[in-house]
Length: 298
Image (cartoon, rainbow, N blue to C red):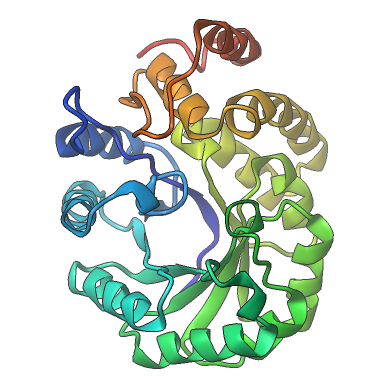
């Protein structure tokens, strides 16, 4: 399975009463289908998965599967604190027709999660999974980092096909690419380092920013893929500045507000996360001005 390309880390829209709005989610997917996105990632960090119930997760899995265009690869976040729960969620994603499981590291008992413990966890999940597994290292949220040596060991498992590496450190991407077999695929989770990550061997990216600016994220990937590095560098510099304000400083609320500016249905995050202040909204609007007319309201 070739995972090359850009995947949005999908947001979860909420209705006025706080419930998940599957109609808004489908609306977003139907618009994304006309872009060059390679597929969709649901129930990840940007999707506020840790704030969702099991029933809500199932509804999201079904809605995205139904709305996704033909040929789009579907990746479901299935990581949980226990190995058993992770396996159960992974099997559930497979039942819904997803192609891959994105499995974040457990983190609550962080002091106990030495490399050998994480390796054993992932091996058990991969052994039981009916679909290929993508490792997921996102230390900004979990405080647990998968490093190149344990990734190299896990890459030997026939059902572990790659990793989403979200630390933002290009050297870590390069080390994983160098340590793993050629068919093991590294995807970066950092929009500001997409160009650099691809230059050291990343196959593509899973990006929160691609939920708001899919066309520009895809354009950057395609420029690098075509060897047009100078044009890619110019676009990367623009996206770096935008990503800093939209995603790095304002996180999920910033991504959702930017989606609203684009005509997508972003909305507000779920409590205890809070919406942006008017001052922060203005900062994002100003940061998007350099990307006009792309970010004009649809």
